[in-house]
Image 1 (cartoon, rainbow, N blue to C red):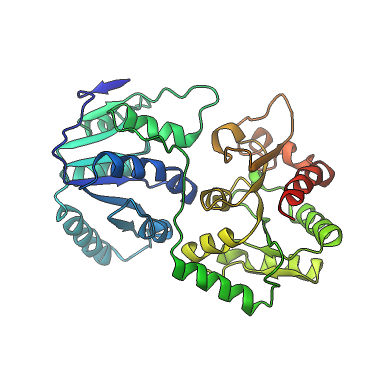
Image 2: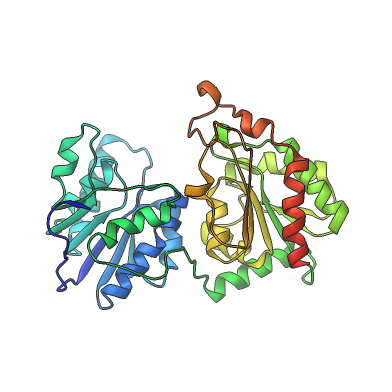
Length: 359
């Protein structure tokens, strides 16, 4: 339901700005929106504004014309002024006709307003920041229904204005050159090319979403003992030492890929894998986007709203009455009982079922 402006966009649109300043997972779940814009405005330039750590994914996106990377590094005030001035000049040179903010925060609203676009589209919010709503010429009310995935919520903003697509789930296009670089990484690690590779991401950015390294070690050891398949450990550069400890504990046929790739090469690595196991993470979305089956270990967050959909994707989550609570741990402690009490024996049958399908 639209709250402000009419529900029909002008067809005479040459330059579109789509703003997604969320985490990497949010960027991936917004890919169907970029695709919808390309299908409805095939001749338009579609520029996507994202945080710098996700910009490579947009550079490889076949439906986007270009990317505006938001650099959040801390700078001295005089350098910050120069950066912001240069950024604004780059933004305005596109002469956007439409700016679309996919989130409900304030940064995207400011960026949409500064873009100079005549049509500025966003979600209506009622949290007291009424000035944010004033930044948009068009506002839509987000009707989040039970069972609705976040990718569907993002698309809802566009379908409100009759911008539709039949492809509602994210797909990541991996250039051949990056697939070749991923293959070179496997060769460098002497990973057998004729065996299915299992990727495991044992870390989370958030403590309350963490299943725990000891449980992942037990799961990896079970995979190694039962199936003798190579397992790669993935994660961000600040998790390299933790990953190395896991590799040392697990031993043979387990490889540390943590921090060794850019986000684009990481997507290529996951495309070459036959199964991806993790908690609620960006890696989960990337794996699903490149077509790799997943096993996702969920705690207090909603698997219905976040986990990949389809027969190739499985979720393991405690059936507690409080799940999902959407809280940062029980009573705000940072520790989630639904993950703490989720045992390896509960996860193994799901992983076994997935491995049996790929072996």
